[in-house]
Image (cartoon, rainbow, N blue to C red; front, side, top):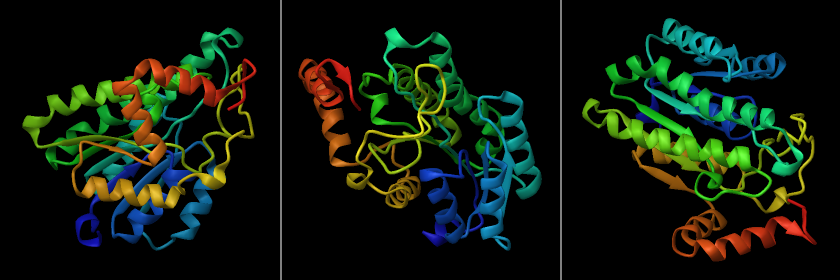
Length: 269
């Protein structure tokens, strides 16, 4: 792993928590020059302080803001000379029924998850093409199967996967590798930070995090998939089973999803 990533320049969006933070740490340890962003200045400062002598560049940025994405990319190129790998990891979830929420909440999720990926990829593209690099989208099982209570999140992940599939085909002649990964249920803060019906963070999760794959293990799988230039990566048994059921038995998948997320007609997960 160290030989492949040594001196490669990698941008990881959303690198202050969960999978993103695990990716940043493991890539630094593999010898990469890493740039990352987040909205929380204190968390970025703590991350930078943990690796004072490492090749780490941090930027306060909200990926839903096009100019802030451009600044992240341009400052990374100025710092390290170019970009080899872009990992579009930053994202937000939601947990609210459509009948209870507003379109603004769904738009907020789309702006972060989909347009954040579009902005960062577009501004990094020339450098990645020149280096015949890699573009990664951290998607979700919700990009294969619409999940109740997560309609905006599912829409954003379907959009990311469809967009990246189109971009992958466009860039085949340029020697650029494009892939998307679907972690399944992983221990991270994405469920605590999930937006409620009013667009505020829930601050808690009804899911049993103890039974989920750790962010560190998930990051290991993603890094290995990048090295092997996989097209897609679906993690966890539940994730793989969900994709299989959705592809071959979609009506049954509807019933199983309802049973999993609802109890007595109320959303419980």
